[in-house]
Length: 321
Length: 234
Image (cartoon, rainbow over all chains, first blue to last red; front, side, top):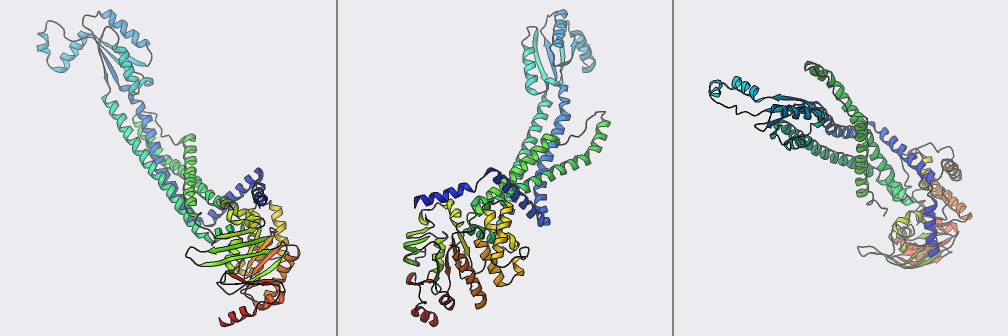
């Protein structure tokens, strides 16, 4: 009896050969594609729902990337003011200014001497007469630094400020970047929002594929029973459904990338008009090769996940009785 | 080939479909299983195909003990059995060729080999030239022959048939039985469940009669009178 039980095992092994295995997978994949093509309307509707669900977060992601690209130029507007200690000679201050310019990561520096600062203050504040009454100039010398684009992130700016603060003749270094911080935190919120929406819609894609595959399994209930009676293994029965899910995801991902491409094509004309009004050379950027690949691969994975869930939940229940 | 050893099958609702059945079917033996509906014929066939498992006792098919068979190994057991159903169980969205090819596709045979074997099976059941048709366009007898071709195309050592002539007229039934005899002659073990007493008696084969889950007759003579009477009362 035992030897014969082994013969069943042996048979299980014999039916497996690597070349045949891949050939069968290709056959099943093509058969699933044929099945999708045979009911074009319902298949297209499923694929369109998947495509739109994915195009929405992916499109928002592209939009944010574009905004980040535009605003990266604005970060240079952050300024650092170095207030120099009282009694420092002008020579030392100019020396420091020259040192800072040599540091790199610096766009430009400007030296404001106590005298010119006082004059400017007099002019702008309207306290001219009152200030004349002072016998000493209370204002310190100031070096205004505009960091370059390379040092535009808040961490880099903070680092720069700290290193400047360590200089013995510097009384106080102040970073004027409140609005940069605000912009970054707004972008952060939007980014997180897009991620949440993206996660929800990815779940929706899994549910959509899962439900479509579930209906497919129900429609082919008798076929599954018959093939099980003839000796089909579970993986043989599972395979076409998994491939259907993968194909839904793949086609949905391709259509989603096309949708995003079309939207960017529609917007790019008016965006370049607007940016030329600001005399900026900015142009809308699309998903790019990497982004498109990620979108399609992700979509395929989601389709696979959806069909896997449906197959795992519903196929096992169908047993001949 | 098939051995029942004190086999009992009780369903979960308490109904005992088979009680302590014992019999042997040898390699290349053709026999009939008969009895009125509810006698346990279907349950017996289901145990052989491992659609049900025995509650007590053993069922050994082609040397494999059904009660100990792992679930993942069931498909490989079923590939040794060709099953023929009363209602044909054909796939109506596929051609005759694709229906018959199914067991070979499941076993992963190469394309050319499948074509060769399917045509051989079609030839045997006299359906050559109908391979591209869909089952709906065929008559009942032809559909049954497609079902038989599908059951034998992978050359299983065992064929089970559940009322294969149930819906056919006597002439067609005789034709189908003749087909089974041909398979039997090349050494296939065949078990046919049928309540067509007249047909069984003409065949002169071993007859196993079930009544209320027990074997009440097992021999090569005519079906027992008591069973006839029972049938007539019903």
